[in-house]
Image 1 (cartoon, rainbow, N blue to C red):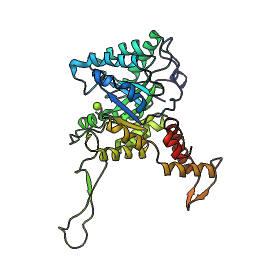
Image 2 (cartoon, rainbow, N blue to C red):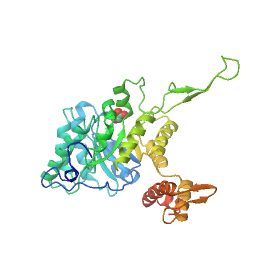
Image 3 (cartoon, protein in one colour):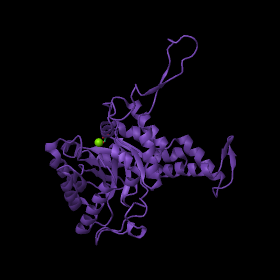
Image 4 (tube, rainbow, N blue to C red):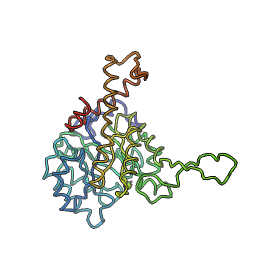
Length: 352
Ligand code: GLV
Ligand code: MG
């Protein structure tokens, strides 16, 4: 429980008339959070197609939006929220960071205009629980003022050294917390990492195989390592411990889909639920990676079937299964069911 609030106060609305905070985040399929620059009319016109293709549509107001187009982006987001029916597809916005000249109006204007349609506010450059507490209180006041009936979630971007230091407090800061994304570009800058890439590996971050034989000049293999392993692992633990979701963020090299897929897959295997898609080509990569593998789902379904009450031990294809593997299998089958609800082809392949 975060310092300062008692268990009974933790789930109380922060403003009279604001909706009751949720005890559990709704189970939703969020394999990709697709970024749209909402000031661009041509791209706004494609939102109806996107709604059918992606799990979350996000109107980006922060980095990558030029300073002189910040208001146009905000207005464009409000227009795209108003003009479309999002159905089961999530509608999020990434607001500007709290110390910027735009953040306050981003929140005031968007909640007033489309608070009832907005699922989640993504908050960049979160340093500690205090940033979440501020936005939490402000959202409650605005929900009350504008009669918003569903609490709007907060999703933090983990992209500063101080944020990583405080990751557990951030995850536990409010029942409004939906989850967290790793922001490798800002995080690299904040830490003084020596890379100009937006996510992904670096050829120089490697371990060298031992020298073998007598020839000290013989070539040795360098094994490239995942620069983001440590932070992703900390983020996943902080999120899972608090019942919220972890995501990998951006992969900037659109011309290298294989490396993007590898980075997404590492995140998926480590426990992440999805990643950002900044380019349409990354939508299918995320879909492929964050939908569980057909063989894996079929095997997991066999484990659940073989252990109806989830206890004891059985052998399947020579592999030992017990209560813990039953729980692993359930994670995979539960996710596959959500995917199957959205994707008839995969439903058939999974046999669900
Ligand atoms: C995302 O915002 C990042 O900085 O990587
Ligand atoms: Mg960033």
